[in-house]
Image 1 (cartoon, helix red, strand yellow):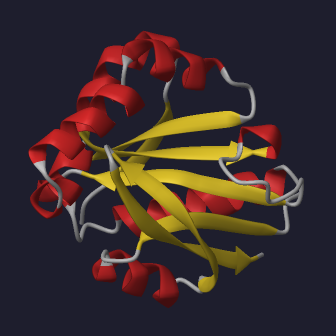
Image 2 (tube, rainbow, N blue to C red):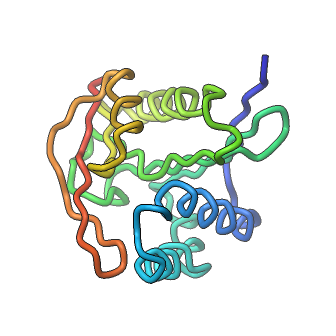
Image 3 (cartoon, rainbow, N blue to C red):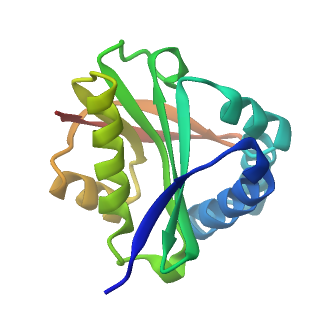
Length: 172
């Protein structure tokens, strides 16, 4: 049985956060997007100054996920004004939940969603929500199994390619 641990990410972890962000995003979405659009997105989303700003945001929290002491993925949560959509002060957003390929199917996704629920409850939130790409069927199935339901959609820009993310919400 693997041991899963979550550890809060700090500014001192910026380089590691950037590296795992680029790696996991590329592994997850690289094959379905052009190299140009992928590069444009990665350059924008994970530039050090932007990650530093996100890590410094009091209404955002990052967690590294470890399996048996090995960095396996990460989670980013937002609440209140840090949310990427206006969902009100009763909601907590799961903005990023990424797992390295070799650590998939170890229970990390479920553990990270449990962490999101725990943080939401500590903050007095009534629901958690996230955006999932309309073509990421495995993730949609996973979230549905955990009690999320589709409540909307929004655009997601991958370089110059406008894509659709479904908004999934879970009441607590």
